[in-house]
Length: 134
Image 1 (cartoon, rainbow, N blue to C red):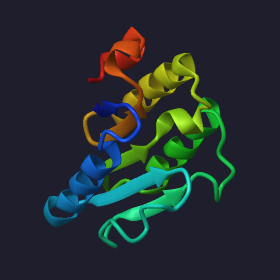
Image 2 (spheres, helix red, strand yellow; image 1 turned 180 degrees about the vertical axis):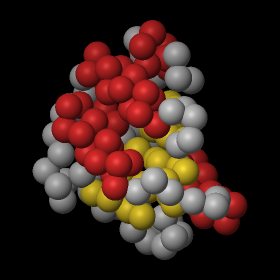
Image 3 (tube, rainbow, N blue to C red; image 1 turned 30 degrees about the vertical axis):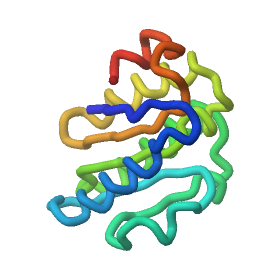
Image 4 (cartoon, one colour; image 1 turned 120 degrees about the vertical axis):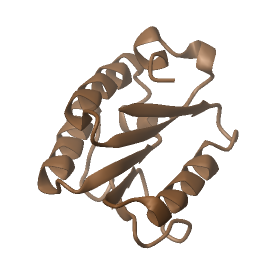
């Protein structure tokens, strides 16, 4: 299941996500994974959440992001929450690619993994394939 946190730059999306991550570390019975571009959340999230930097693994584009997410999920069956900060940065601001990768991630996450994604755009600017996760 995918949930989006949508808003323009500076609207508090990452802060909302940080609060959700820290709350999840208190209540989850499984593992939490946070995927971001550059390690800017290191000191702000609870150490119980596993932080992964796509830059460290040279992840660029929707196909690579999907492969990375699939590998993380395949490698650990105990993941209950996954957070992806700034998906448009990873897919080079390609809305069509973002919509496609969200659909693919939704399929492999199923109902067992809650995936929360920040999208830095105005809600009205999102195509239907992304907006449906709002």
